[in-house]
Amino acid sequence: MTKGKNMNIGDELRGVLRGTVLTAGDEGFEQARRPWNLAVEQPVRAVVEAADAEDVAALVRHARLAGLTVAAQPSGHGATGDNDGVVLLRTGRLDDLRVDPVERVARAGAGVKWGRVLEAASPYGLTGLAGSSPAVTVTGYTLGGGLSWFGRRHGFASRSVRAFEAVDAAGELVRVTADSDPDLFWALRGGGGDFAVVTAIEFDLHPAPTLYGGRLLWPAAMAPAVLDAYREVTATAPEELTLWYDLLQFPGAAPLVAVDATFLGAGGDAETLMRPLEKVAGRLSDSRAVLPVAELGGITAEPTDPGPGVSRAELLTGLTDEVAAALLDEPIDPLLSVQLRHLGGALARPSGTPAGHLDEPYALYLFGIPGQDGGAAVRERMERLTGALVPYTSGRKPFTFLAPGERAAAAFSPADLARLQEIKRTRDPRDTFRSNFPVLA
Ligand SMILES: Cc1cc2nc3c(=O)[nH]c(=O)nc-3n(C[C@H](O)[C@H](O)[C@H](O)COP(=O)(O)OP(=O)(O)OC[C@H]3O[C@@H](n4cnc5c(N)ncnc54)[C@H](O)[C@@H]3O)c2cc1C
Image 1: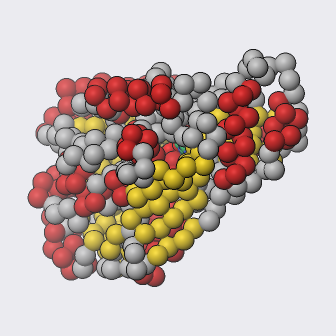
Image 2: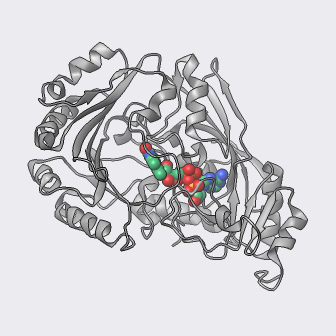
Image 3: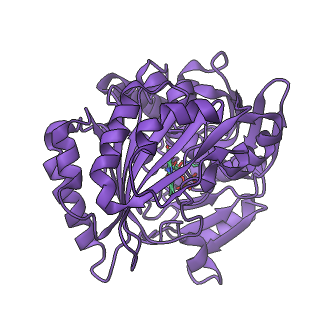
C-alpha cells in the first residue's frame, strides 16, 4: 500500500480503532491538533486519542501497513511543528497510576502528568524525579532524560526507569527492561520518542521525607549581589541542595530577581547553607518552608495552561565574572525569564543512558512570549545574550531543553547518537514513529 493519501484517513482509522479519531473538517479537530505551546503550528493529518494500550497497538499495526507515521504527543509541551502529515497520538486515556511505597516504585500510564505522581507519592515521603512543571507527562519528560529538581542527587530521571511497556514498530505490546531488550531499553532512557510508543513506564521513587524549598525574591537592582551569593553557595553546595537563579520580567511589573531552592533534608541545614543569600539586602519575600512533595510545582509556579512561548537553552562551562557580566549587562526585556540551573553532582557522573553526563556546571534557560512580530524581538534578545556567551557555552543541550528548529544531535555524544541512529534504523525501518526531535534528522 502507498502512503494512504488517496484514502479517507479518518474512516480508515475509525475502522481499526476504538478511541477517538479526528481529521480536517471534523468538529474539534482544530482544537485537538493544537499543542500546549500555542506558538507552534501542527499540520497533522489526523489526531487519535487512543482508548488503551491495545488501541495504540492497533494504530501502529495499521500505520505500518498503510505507510503512515505516528507521533505520540500527550500534551505538546515539547511540540516542534515538525509533524507535517503525521497521525498525532494523544495518550491522555492511558491514565492508570500505581504507587508501591514498600517497593518504592511507581507505574504511570503514558498520559499521566508529574503532578499526579507527586501527589500520590507525597504521603509516603517519596518522590519521583520531576522537574519544575507538574503539567508535563512522566513519559515524555523521561524519554528525553528528564532534568529534575533532584538530578544533582539522583541523576537524570531516565536512570530511575525499571521498565517500559510499549508498542514496538511491529505493533506488538512489549515490556522492555535491561534484561529483555538492552538496546531498546537503553534508547528509551533518554533518546526520545523515535523508537516505540510507550504505553506505561515503571520507575523508582526516592526518599524525600523532609523536603524543604521555596523562592527568595528581590527587586532586580539586587541582581548582581544575588548572583554573587548564588555563585558562592552553589560552588560548595551538597548534592541534596539545588538552587536556580532567575531574572524575571513579568509584563507591566517591575523586574525581579529570584532564587528557587529545594533541599532533600532538614530546613535548618538548608538555611545554614544558603546564608550568603539570606544576607543580601532588600528581600521582598521568602516562601521557603518544609514542603510536601506534592507542592513541588508551586516553587516556580510555571503556567499550567497552554500558551505561546519561545525558549532557548545552553549549557554553561562556568559561571565566571565574564558570564555574570554578560547576564546582567542590560534588562532582560522582552524576555520573561533568564534562568540558571545548578547542575553537577550525579548529573556529572556517567548515567549509562543516552542522556550521558553533563560536565557543564550550569544550564541557562531563556523564555519569552512572542508578540505581534511572531517572536522576532524575543529571538533577537536571546541571540544577543547567547552570542555574548559563546565562549562560555558548550553547544550541547539536554534533550528536553531542545527548542523548535534545533536537532537531536545537540543532545548526545557522537557515539551515543550513532548508536541511537542504528537502533532507529533496525527497530523502526519503515520510520513509523516520529519523535519531536528525530535522531536521524
Ligand atoms: C513549563 C515547562 C517546564 C519544563 N520543565 C522541565 C524541567 O524542569 N526539566 C526537564 O527536563 N524538562 C522540562 N520541560 C521540558 C519537558 O520535559 C519536555 O518538553 C517534554 O518533552 C514534555 O513531555 P510531554 O509528554 O509533556 O510533552 P509532549 O510534547 O506531548 O511530548 C514530547 C515528546 O515526547 C515523546 N513522547 C511523549 N509521550 C510518548 C509516548 N507515550 N511514546 C513515545 N514517545 C512519547 C514524543 O517524541 C513527543 O514529541 C519543561 C517544559 C515546560 C513547558
